[in-house]
Length: 349
Image 1 (cartoon, rainbow, N blue to C red):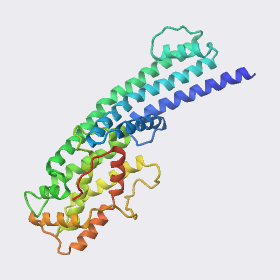
Image 2: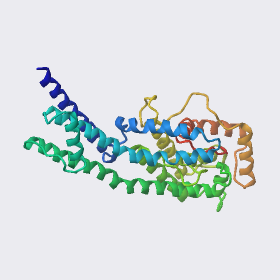
Image 3: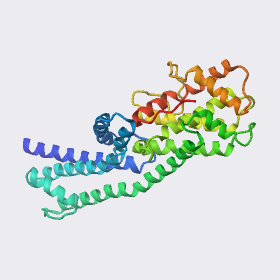
Image 4: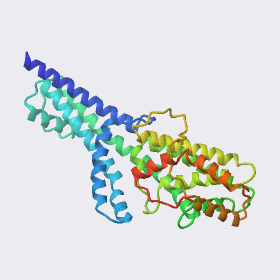
């Protein structure tokens, strides 16, 4: 009686493992929704710990950046390997539950079927059907990853194109005030509306791609000093500086871009931060004390805008308070994302 119970339990456990793996693959690459896949986190987290330890041996940022640049590609390649291993283990339990031999024989049959080696023969049509199903599943898992690699790298290329352009326009070192002056380069009364519209699209794509394909967040820029996190910070800081410091009506497209940026960054933040439980439709106004730029840095940026001929508010204190409030909507999220992606630090203003 115990013998049959153990075999039945092994069969059920094997089916569950196969279903969990197939579900993880579908939710990772097919389902157009941002879901945390637990099986994937069991792959990514140990690898991240290993890479964090390796990067901590380097004293310079460039050295740590070189190590961390390999994390996302290695994790992505390791994912199907783990999926196939779990499927092999699951079908081993299924074959053992169907009394196809001892554990070693069942594991060899499972591996032969999964890798389509065909070195082991089965007994009966039911077991043969399971071996064909396993071989099909193995090919399906590999095909899913291979077919989505171009999608991942296309999204990466589009992201990095904006990152590179913003860096060129924000100066060296990049600052929000320099980027804002560039936006008003043609007319001090009107910013570059087309540029704000392009950045709005970038933020919207960023949210979709970095939550449906979360490993994309950890693909580092080709240059050590660049990061999508710091680029988002520069764009949002430029908008906050414009709304708080410049006189006159605000550009509606810039307001839409600022809202899209706050929503996108906070949704990515919520996806990776499991400790918060808030509605995705809400922004993230933070009542906690924030690490804001020093007042002297704000005054310096204010002076640079004045030198550039931009129309400024007369009350600098009110401008500072408004900037402080606007920045509180996204600073917490950006600081968190900067830490987990090990983004380079840039001057705030």
